[in-house]
Length: 262
Image (cartoon, rainbow, N blue to C red):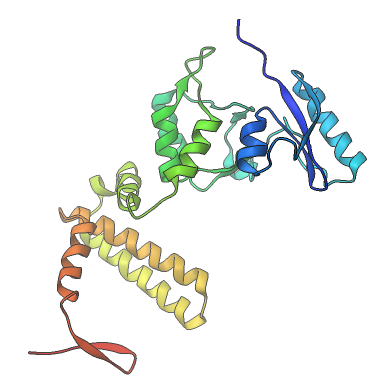
C-alpha cells in the first residue's frame, strides 16, 4: 500500500512560514537552511488543513500571507491560456492524449503557471519538447496525460532554457510544426527578413531597447528558416562567415569596421 504524503508547515524564525511536502528539497536545498535553523510547526496528510493552518500561522506571526493557498494552484493569464490543466503538488495533468499533446501545447507558447514549491513553469519550445517526451498516459483516462512537477523543474533548472546548443533546433522544430518548410519558400522568407529589418530600424531610431532585442531575434528566426529552405543550416552559414572574418584585418572608420584590401 502506498504511503500517504505528509505535508509540513515550517518556520524560519524572522523570515517566513511556509508549507511543503519535502523539507529537504524546499527548505534545505532550495532556501539553504540547515536542520536547527528552522522548525516544524505542524504536519498532516490533510493538505486542506495544512493550507488553512499555514495562512492562519502566517497572520499570527505577522509574516507575509501567501496570496494563493498551498493547494489552490492556479494558472496565470487563464483566459489567454484556455487550457484546463490540473495542477497538484506532484503532477500536472493535461486534458489531451499524448499524440495530441504537442500540437496543443505549441498553441500556448509563452503561457506560464506557478507552483508554490518549484516556482514558475513556462511553455517554450524546449519545455514543450520535454513535456511531450516524458508525458505519461493517465490510468484513469487515455484522453489525459501528465508529467511529474519535480522532474520538469529539475530538467528546466538543468538545461531546459533555450541556449545556443539547441536554439536553432528549436526554431526549426517550431517552423516545421507550422508548415513553413512544407508550404513556404526562401523568397517569402527573404521578404519577411526585410520586414523585420524595417522594424529593427524603427526600434533603433526610437531607441527602444526591448523592440531592438525582439527585432534582432525575429531576424535570426527568419534567417534560420531561410537557410533551411535552401538546404543549408544557419550554423554552417555562421561558421563559414566566421572563418572568413576571423582572418580579416582592418580598422574602424566613422563607426564602421573597414577591412583591409589586398
